[in-house]
Length: 264
Image 1 (cartoon, helix red, strand yellow):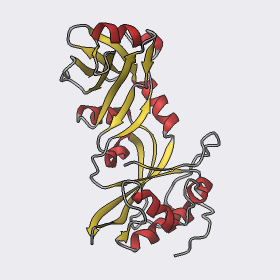
Image 2 (image 1 turned 45 degrees about the vertical axis):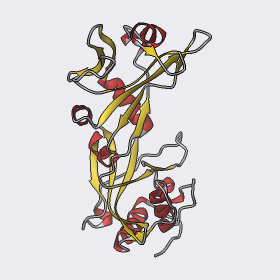
Image 3 (image 1 turned 30 degrees about the vertical axis):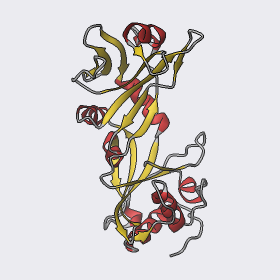
């Protein structure tokens, strides 16, 4: 296949279709990052640089189908005006002593069912709240705030999905699905949260100095192969549609460095 520099989004899609026609390809690197490295090589992309997708204006991500690896969507604290109890006050009041003797709060929070520290997520059509079974709501994320954060982190991307199999103890990939994803779908984001696919991680402790150490409150996805469901627009790229008939105009992201991410 022609591995020359991709000059347009149509060129990029054409090369992805050539990759699909190859069928199963042996990984070029062992381990989780093999799926991204192998795809880069097949597309003629130099590692850590994306002449193709960058030229086409779209970030590239790859994932194994039905993967249940945990991936961070973004880290973001709730808006200051929406914090009833947060950081030091939250850890001191509702935290616990960790194995290093520090007051800490490091828990995964899911909707409806309190975890072992009493935290759970509540939601309506306009917000998601971090709640506690005894204290009530401790902080709230407006849905439009989550949308702004999500779109800043992932404004637009092409997601490539591969089936996998092992042959002679070596992983092989068949890159047989790809989607152009754009925009944030708040309803589907909430549905993924209700399904337990999207969760929230609190990651704080009090340092010896008495100051808070917050590693970033992380919104995470348990099944990265379902990431596409959180986007408003989802266009299949590897079906029978003629490349020139795919109605997509990639948006330039001059402020974002080119980056090829593996979601595993």
